[in-house]
Length: 67
Image (cartoon, rainbow, N blue to C red):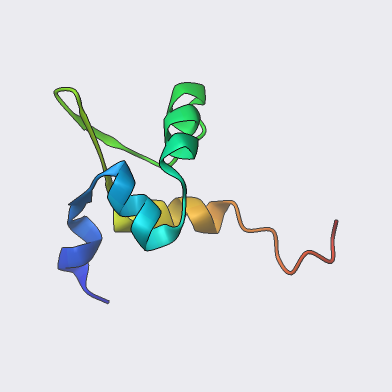
């Protein structure tokens, strides 16, 4: 695992490209307080890959057989 790339700050567009989570979803989730951990620098919103992965893992629901 490359810790340097895990800590690199990403824009919402970067997150969309790397993880397939749409920018608009991230915006709405941020407003609702349900999105991944974000870093706010002035008016800029950034994410770390490790925080996105942790958020995805926390929302995993197995193989779907429990539905």
